Length: 96
Image (tube, rainbow, N blue to C red):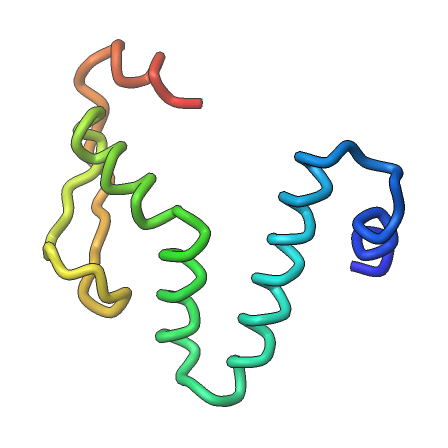
């Protein structure tokens, strides 16, 4: 974290990656500040939502059909992603 903060404070990075790293560090700080104030499951949900992973899983479930969503609720406690056996080769090639 120290090296990342130093890179953000300097001109070592171009503007776009420097801003992205700055935003990531701010998110880490925000999540760290909340870790004692809220239940860990709620914090995990916030991290997944704000980082884009929840949306990525939803898009992948729709486009790839490799996962099924057991509940439409975005709450971590009720969102269950179940892996299905891959039945099409096309799905495997779309994975990154």
